[in-house]
Image (cartoon, rainbow over all chains, first blue to last red; front, side, top):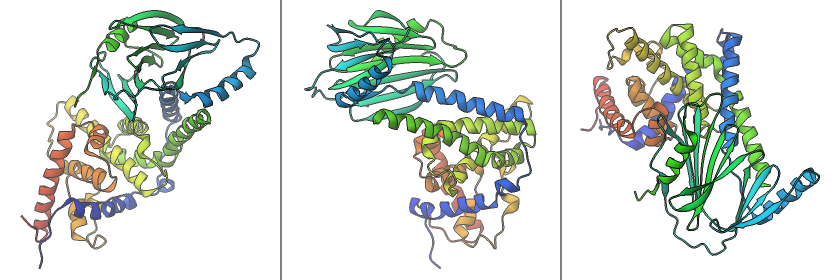
Length: 234
Length: 182
């Protein structure tokens, strides 16, 4: 009788069958005689609702100029009477900033950014925050952190010929200095954002919370995070 | 177009969360209740498991697939075991970390005739902490890092569990009279 060897291949072959066996042993949903209390159902629905929000609000849209134009046209159609557009060039940013009533467009115009993409990551996080997700693309990094109630997003990308939209309606915006580079601190309801551009790269650090925040001194914490973004050479 | 696709994607995820809950909520309770033997604690386990599912929503494609059912089953089982241990500690009773037999929810359901394959029977008999890691890796196709995040353990612990799980499987198979290579 030949001896078997416990290898990864062997486990890849048999584990799906074991899982199927276990799952098949569990009674069908309709055969389980249990009704959750309505209070519990409501609790889960609330959990879903709360979980959606960071997913939605963490999205920072970046499009090509062509797509952006479509978006602008639609927006103009909707807000013709109320929109006031101010365009200015920010020296340090090397981008065009268009301030609309409901949002601000940062128009990056660097067609020749052939810099090597560096893996820059925050070395400092406020107490209790842990990484929950990370998306790394060619020239684009998006990390998400949470302490359970507050959500922190770090978005870093190489500046190219694209536009960035930020919801800046009724916001409080102030200038900040991040390691000698000028940036903007934007505060809106439960969202706190710092955005700056440095040597061909754009950095966005955003903190938001749902019902209650456990982060004191949000401004100072965001500045501290921003100042402690270093290259990860691993 | 990208904007619209993004919105659809978000809406899709929202529906996906609700569908998962409605499709598996009773099964989730069934598994948790079997381990915790208390309705209130089982609710806590379901809620915590659902939170983990939401965090790992990208690993779920077809809600009604066997793979998804298996994935949810592993999450609920492990979450329930964690809660069980916490409650034990809280009650200052002795915690027998290695006594995984407490959590062998399937053990009394084994049917050796049904399970014709000896290797599969051996995997099924593994302590839960090894079996979960095996199923997440070799059936669900998760990386060690993803398994670590899901089970709240270090990646190095996942690697150790895989190694020890293989050793344990060898031991079990030998006890079953199966010849295994050293």
